[in-house]
Image (cartoon, one colour):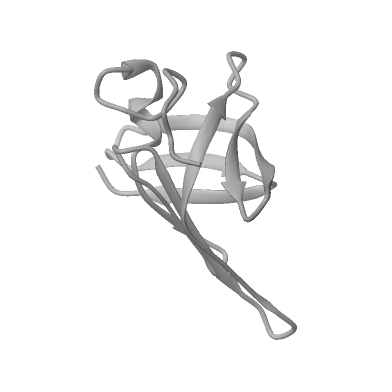
Length: 104
């Protein structure tokens, strides 16, 4: 299943453009590409999780998150705080309870 809907991250859909880029924090690396794909990795002493180039299949209008298609199912990534740029130019957002940052 590819990414084929208007809900995708794309330069054509500027309402989601702030999400594009590589976000890091707390041992997590999350990348959202401008062609609608999601890459995620995290590693703790007990486990590691890696999702590579999963298509983003839905954005929620209320900025509460987005769905990624992994294997045979969708997984909602919960956004508690959408991307915001601070005075120094650093971007922050909170996804699944983890604060992530990216440079401008």
